Amino acid sequence: MKEIRVGFLMSYDYKLLKNSIPLVYKEADSITIALDENLRTWSGGNFEIDDSFFLWLKSFDAENKISIYKDNFYDPDLNAMENEVKERKMLASKMGIGNWLIQIDSDEYFVDFKQFTDELRLRNKYLNNPEKNQIQIAGYYVNLYKYTEDGILYVSEARNQKFATNYPSYATGRNTNKQVIYIPSLVIHECLSRSEEEIRTKFSNWGHSHQVDIETFLSKWRNINQSNYKDFENLFYLEPEKWKKLSFVKGRSIPEISRNLDYNELRPSRSYLLSKNFGQWFKFLFR
Image 1 (tube, rainbow, N blue to C red):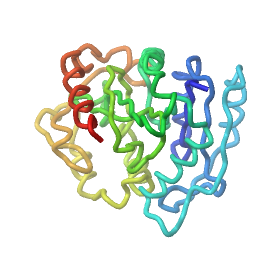
Image 2: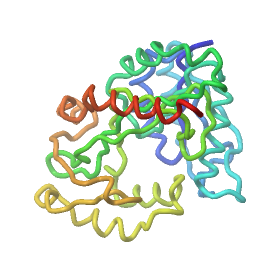
Image 3: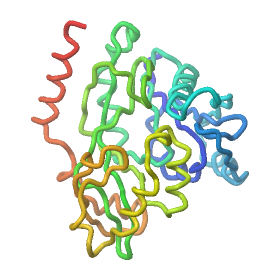
């Protein structure tokens, strides 16, 4: 026990796992990939997986760390978010409570996974009685918005996201509504840096499918380019003001983009994290 256990969700964008899995493989004690046995999304849509992906997975897994967990994760009586929570809880149970449970989506790329796991191990005391000492560990997203001719547009301010917990009482996505510890780990999120067709597929099948006005969002997304991006603001697809503005970085691939990003500018300051963590500690002090 007290291992670093990583879970991935495998669906319509499974090919992106070829980017995300290698970034965490070395530091993970085990990796479990959840795959709906009927190849259905949280909204009940169908997807296909090319056999070549499984061949790649087998050849990549030199240390036999990876297992595929197939089950029925779709319930027609639940909405997409409820099905997401169902799958995340089932996956976490399979991974094994008593360990650090890290769930990563296929389009999330850790910049320095060792730094993240080192931070977790400093807090192994939370694994002794996890149900009574529930905690969440959050890093920070660098949200990619749209590819341009010379590079990519991304959201200027990194946003926090929960990635790990000691006890998976998920309520919404990966959020357990328990105390959060914020750490300075960055994750590149290939959120909207896709084709219009791929964005439509994502918005129609993920946990927030019932909350997104696809056409309104896409009408704005189409019009933004490398020349005019500074003229646009309030760009998030749920609560627009959460993504105030965009920045630009050169790069035509995730590795190149990762090399060119200014992480010192994106990473939250130590004083900011201290303030956030003190606030969380005080909020949950008497709960």
